[in-house]
Amino acid sequence: MGCNTMAKDILVVENLKKYFPTKKKGLYVKAVDGISFTVREGETLGLVGESGSGKSTTAYNVIGMYGVTAGKIYFKGVDISGDAGKRPLSLKKDLQMVFQDPGTSLNPQRTIGQILALPLKVHKIPGEGERLEDRLIQLLETVELPPEYIYKYPRSIGGGERQMVAIARALATNPSFVVLDEPTSALDVSVQAKIINMLIRLQKQFNLSYLFITHDLSLMRNLATRVAIMYLGKIAEIAPAVDFFRSPKHPYTQMLLSSIPVISGAEEEMKPKKVPSRGEIPSPVNVPPGCGFHPRCPMARQICLEVDPIMVETIPDHFVRCHLFAGAAEAREVVGA
Image (cartoon, rainbow, N blue to C red):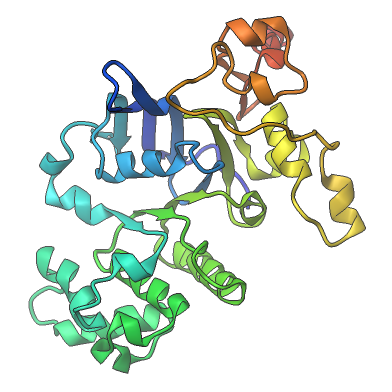
């Protein structure tokens, strides 16, 4: 997908931090540790990372399930980083989420019709003169489910169909922004492609903006407009998807991309040179000094052990947080002088 740098920012995250206290006094889990990014109108930003990288915590901060420890979150220019419980109903209507496991996010004691009707009643949709049942049927048809599913219970349908219901529930309030937290990871491979194609169609149909949380980097190649890689609570690299897969900069990104399975020689040629994967992601309670990736990085230098790098723009709209590119910003300034 192409990257439209002229589009307006619908979501702006500035130096976001989310720390959780541990049982030991003075120690915190630094789940999200000072990240900044934007999501533009009509685009999909893929936020990718291993388990424990902080990507889902970021999603929960954006949606308001967690309050922030520090930093700011702006949605359509409005500061939403305060008490999540005080967010206006109109904002909650415009900002929705699809969770990873529809088996736990859908109330098993309610019919699908009742599940879809709840947000409609809360937000007083449909308007006067419209029938609730007509709106419910329309929602089901939007996600390619038949009208009679109104009377079914979540337990009586398959996992893929449950996720379609969850997507329909998110669309019920006519949002402009949807957070997708690993929406296909709990599904069979045969169903994943159908869900992804549906999300792409719905984005075009309703002009939606997506923040797509995933651990599956290969999924982002044909879905994301831009890709951001998280590691140990920080963003390591963020770039347009085309540039990201063609010319990854950060050693961690190269490590991830070089380990993606491929099925053709052309795909193999596109992969970066094999970067050996070593070690495990450290605990966010005991973050290594300097660059958090240095214990696993084959290119680590002394400065990496001592100084946490800052994010620099290597080429337009392609940012990387690595000492190997520390002079990139200065070099660009000289070239442009």
